[in-house]
Length: 363
Ligand code: HEM
Image (cartoon, rainbow, N blue to C red; front, side, top):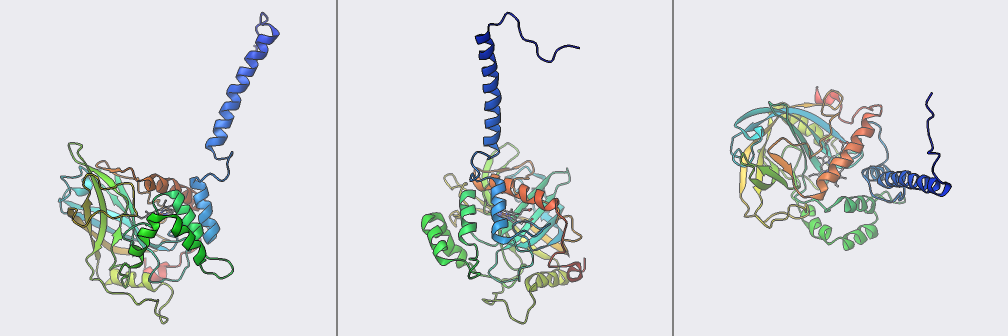
């Protein structure tokens, strides 16, 4: 049998030691690089894993549930494109006609059994299914701007706004310190706090917030942001949840509305102009930017998480069809990376029943 390691007998001892030292250095360097990339050298480095750990520290761990937007209900329906956006994006989504969609309504936060409340962030996630097998996944919320610019600020904000274990409420001093240190948040908060709060999930707009790039047939790029604007007329919400209503009253309202008639939103695209920031979701573009009504999202059927394939789906906003591309917004890659960790953890766990059950949705 051939020996595993042969040593050149003509080598002098110093030359042999030098060769071994070089091999040692190469191996040691590779191990250090690997440890650095894995975050083992500095356990305080912010990674997708530490962001999800922070959610778990703040909200606790609810096996099988999303680490954010944990309370939700799913739906099926379709998107009817009117063809108006076909000149801006070569994606089949915008050719005139109808394609199926799957989606999920949810509340922001990691508490799957939290009681419905008017001011809690409401969200809409949609998967557009194109005839050629491509998908467009988008996850939107009912805030007109995002409170932070990047994932570092997001993680700090999670901690600053976390309930104090002594009082069960966020500590105003910590919030003040966070806002004072982040001027972008200080600018965004009044817009968030002054937003009109609607009576339910069906009469609120949902904003995509991040900028994306539409690519035309000729490859021409256009910066775009989108909003789902409800056809259902706005009804104001009372400031607090009515005491007579149950803890799922907003979800129950949505289920009842869809049972009575399909609920509809217009997909409104806002076109950015040169110089409009595409990397900062805390600011809106000027009001006079052109808007295009690209078609109608129709929610036909509500389904519980127990039966819908949307439960086991990751609404990663970077899953895009040809004709829509990411922008330079740093939130997009951060969202993709953290959603993936949340998804991997929850998919490896035993599922507990959701707050909104099949008995309520009827499906
Ligand atoms: C760095 C910033 C952000 C972080 C760290 C973050 C984190 C997360 C996580 C961990 C999930 C659960 C993913 C899963 O298990 O499937 C999630 C879901 C969601 N996020 Fe974000 N998010 C961020 C920014 C945003 C922004 C800017 C929006 C809105 C424009 C948004 C809207 C949503 C929605 C709607 C869902 C629920 C999707 C579903 O129903 O599955 N997030 N987020």
